[in-house]
Amino acid sequence: MSTISPIFSMPRSQSHHTVSAAHSPYYCTTLKTPFKETPSMADLKSYTLVNPLPQHTHLLVSYSKPSMSVKTTTRQPKSSVSTPKSGGVLSRGGKEQKLNLEVSPHRAVSAVRLMRIEKGGAFADLLNEKGKGSGNNEMGYVERTLGFRTRDLEDRDLRLVSDIVGGTIRWRRYLDHLIASLCHDESTFRNMEPLLLQILRMGSYEIVKLDMPAYAVVDENVRLAKVALRPGAGNMVNAILRKLVLLKENNSLPLPIVEGDDRAKARALATIYSHPVWMVRRWRKHLGAEEAVKLMNWNNSDPRFSLRANRGKGFTRDDLVVSLEKLKQVPHELSEHLDDFVRISTGLQDVIQAGLLKKGLCSVQDESAGLVVSLLDPQPGESIIDCCAAPGGKTLFMASCLHGRGMISAVDVNKGRLRILKEAAKLQQVDNVITTVHADLRALVENNSVRYDKVLLDAPCSGLGVLSKRADLRWNRRIEDMEELKNLQDELIDAAAMLVKPKGVLVYSTCSIDPGENEERVAAFLVRHPEFSIDPADRYVNPDFVTELGFYSSNPVKHSMDGAFAARLVRSP
Ligand SMILES: C[S@@+](CC[C@H](N)C(=O)[O-])C[C@H]1O[C@@H](n2cnc3c(N)ncnc32)[C@H](O)[C@@H]1O
Figure 1 (cartoon, rainbow, N blue to C red):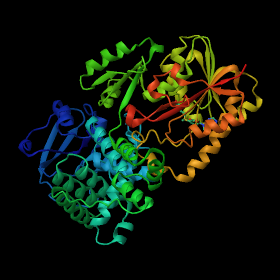
Figure 2 (cartoon, helix red, strand yellow):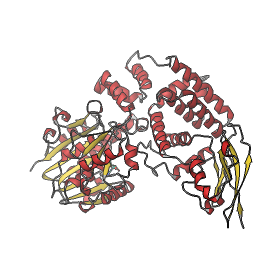
Figure 3 (cartoon, rainbow, N blue to C red):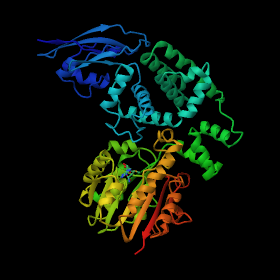
Figure 4 (cartoon, rainbow, N blue to C red):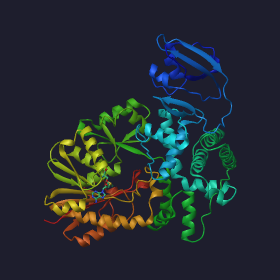
């Protein structure tokens, strides 16, 4: 008979409870051990939790194999929360892992994700689908970075991670300004170790921008710093965050004054609205001072999403609305501009959890992207090439418009993203009209004599129109990128033009609001290619989106959707 001795924590009031095999599921659910279901003997054999929760008494639980009878013994809880890296030991399949139940899992995961994003190893994944950056891999990163595991994330934790990470990244420059002003001296801030800085940013964000109980936020972040780093780090977090709470309560948070020349004003605004200085200067020049501030406010607001019903799968917008109404917590309204689209203001996680995306019934797609497809106006029977297709948002929408007749070649230089497109096409049952081609467009046109009715070039761009959804993007873009992107956009549009039949259509689009990537690229193209002319967009999209020159342009502030641009160009006969 083998006897196994895992130690569980349980509420004090139940310290004399006699554990029996029949109760084992009870431990799983109530005590929130890492077990998701009734533990098997194999699970029990492999778990040893020794880390105490302050309010819990520890029970040593022994399971004996044949009869599943259980003995319990009580232990006094360890009271200190400052034990450095004092995780319990979780051994599974013989592999020892430290498990820490003192630290709130969403904070531990958020801190590590913030570090990874800053180092370029992850995206601020606002969709935050389970398994996509939040599954086992992520817990592995947490363990390697902090030296312990936390309990697995529940749905509520996932939402918190998404909110905290997105917000902390967006507000980084502003938060750093607050933290630096509360440090003893500038070098303390400049030389701060990365994990400590992330914990301080996270805590500052929760205090200043989220409506969370301030002292609980301080305590939790102090605990994380103590356990993940050392007691002294916790003391520093405590000192800075407590000062911040007081400043906030007294309405006296330090803010730079907007004064001086354009550069100085842009620097102050960049801190107040947390954007890079070069972007602020560019927008003040192109949009004017007032619109630039409105745009930054939009970029800092919670992202809004829209869903496209996948007609290719026979799922209509009415079906989608019925499904959303069943979810109750997903306020939605019909798109005014696109027949298949529904706007949701919150509740994307509920849509994900209901499996609507996994089943291929709908896709998350911004209306601004849908309107680019409206401009191309795909018709059944046509031949279309999507020159920069992956991960496939527009290809899939175009495919659903073909009703099974016609064909789309989906080209992309990125094999992994192209694979995502292929899988999604299958799931949405539009793969019968899509062929994927892994190639650099510039090389492809060298040996290709096929010409198409319609050509879409959704060019690689700065993404300056989608900053509310891509929280990390503003910090990854440099002004030098804009020049490099222009050259690439020129080369790609020249290549795409070679694929257009006489009288055929070329749509050039970006998810940028920068004239350098939009109007200026089209103007330069038309000089190089007099065989093309502008087909005004107002025949295809609501005139509210149409510029003086006949281009499609969505404005985040005006239209409450991402910023995008597209030009419809027609080749002469
Ligand atoms: C803006 S994204 C396309 C988004 C896509 N149209 C959609 O709606 O989901 C630009 C794409 O261009 C691809 N790309 C960049 N350079 C390329 C090249 N030289 N040839 C083909 N594809 C390229 C990138 O891999 C990226 O997937």
